[in-house]
Image (cartoon, rainbow, N blue to C red; front, side, top):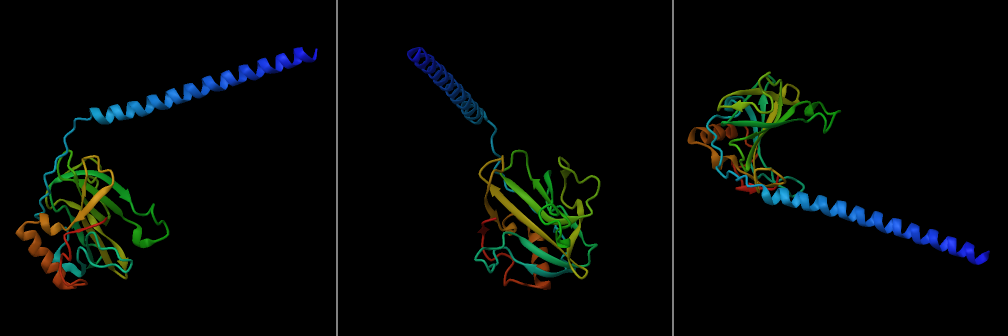
Length: 228
């Protein structure tokens, strides 16, 4: 009797061990298949990244309405550098314009990042200058977007994007940034590039006029690149 019980217990243990072994093998197989599928998709992606840089020909805000201008690459207190042109303007009705041609790839609500801060009640608009471009142009702190400003919309230089976001006591603000990525998927920004590098003479002259209205930094561009 005792031996029979031992035999039954041993058989149950063996069956359970075999079952666990088969389950583990199946899970490993599924995991291996998923990893292989992902790697295969990546390796089969023949899409060519377009490295053509954007061209900025229209100022993103009226330079005559600027009251302060933080130049690209300005030092922050935490040891990082400003990755964009950051301007404040006189009035909340100041308009923000597309500086170049492109396609709107994303529109993100800043309110979701900080719902209790009235200075974040606006949007960030990401624009790609060309199909499969490695660059993204970012217009941050824009509100009152027109109905045609949606993901997928085509833009031309000078198109209205909306109004500046709120800063304080009737002062508005907006930011203009160019990120350069490793490929068209825009997975993790490599660098922010000073917009002056991609500006026409008219665009860069307008930025210098804006900077002169209220220079927070000595120059429009303090450095060529920054970590976004």
